[in-house]
Image 1: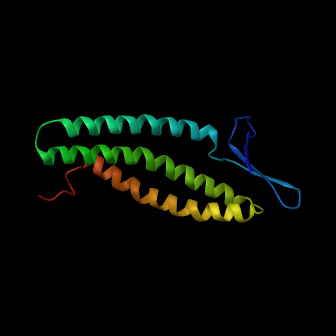
Image 2: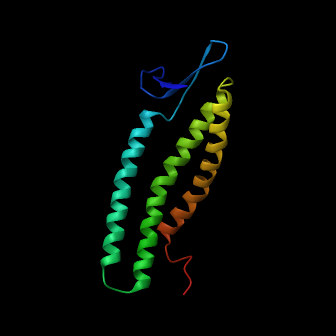
Image 3: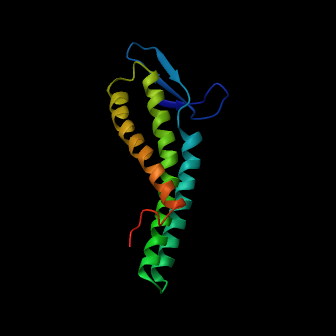
Length: 141
């Protein structure tokens, strides 16, 4: 298995597999470097911003409940930035692997890992979005 250029020459957007019989199978889109590098860059920036914000909130004097509410909103925003691309990448990769019939054990194991990952992300995205939009709706005092 290797990520290769798609029909438009964009690197890492197609998955090519050499089958046991010597033939090759290819499918696209594949969330390779074309999508992976921007996702990783966004993840690094958002994680740094989240940690910086949480540190500032923790050091700020004030009401404990207010700090907790703000921290929850920041973590939920970070979770949204992580979960949404994860859902897209996991479902795209799983769909590509399902298109290839000769991917063998590696492809089957990858799908067994990708489906639960996509499912967790699918559940996490609405929760994070709801928490960011209406942070106090679920909090009872």
